Amino acid sequence: MTDSRPQQKISVCMATRNGESYVGEQVASILPLLQPDDEIIISDDSSTDRTVQIIKNLNDRRILLLENNTFFSPIFNFENALKYANGDIIVLSDQDDIWLENKIKLIRERFRQCPATIHLIVMDGLAIDATGKIIEPSLFRRIAAGPGVLKNVYDNTYMGCCMAFSRSLLQIALPFPKRIPMHDMWLGLLAELFGTVEFLEEKTIMYRKHATSMTEFQRRFLPLTQIRRRLYLGWSLGTRFLARRASQWTLTDG
Image 1 (cartoon, rainbow, N blue to C red):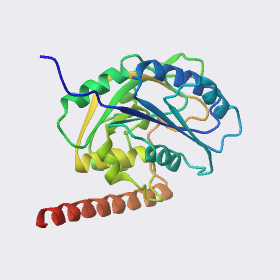
Image 2 (image 1 turned 180 degrees about the vertical axis):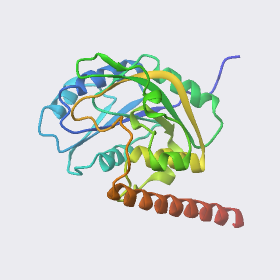
Image 3 (image 1 turned 135 degrees about the vertical axis):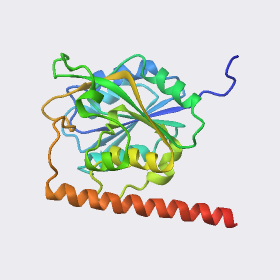
């Protein structure tokens, strides 16, 4: 039987900063996968190279470029992009990876099948070096990815570049607390608390590991500053949880 429901709009949210080496290739890998009504929201944080001009040269009406920001933070640069997203499904993207052809199709299928109001999926990928050579056949295996609140508070495996989630998650997640360790950790943990989460083994990106990439593969003991950030993260999660429950009780009583 044919699914008669309208296709959900996708918003790809990307944060850029001095990404001229790879951003053109990354966006070019995304655009052919999108439908005419989908969008890419790109928030640029103080780039001093050709990043902004490269994006403008792509000249695609589906791209919304947010310029002249001075966050100096990937967390709040991503938050800025999320604030402008209009899609039913939000997909996060780094500035320097390459998307595989199956990514958007898989995302649409999983969200079409999931009845949950808040749903988040994490998809596997393979890692490449600066030249495009494969250096890791599975990101999931390399970082022992999987769900679990305590597991991911201690050692986050919610890689933003592998994530997509329901728009409704933003109602809880925004605004971001000021001192969370990373945006992807915050979003993933909130999805576990308030919705459903899937880790899918399908590989949908080539994650580029190079000198300036953010994600570290080695697992290590947490320094004191990170312990403090995780304590703050736990407090922030608890605060949002209680606020959400309070609003639900108010609606029920009303």
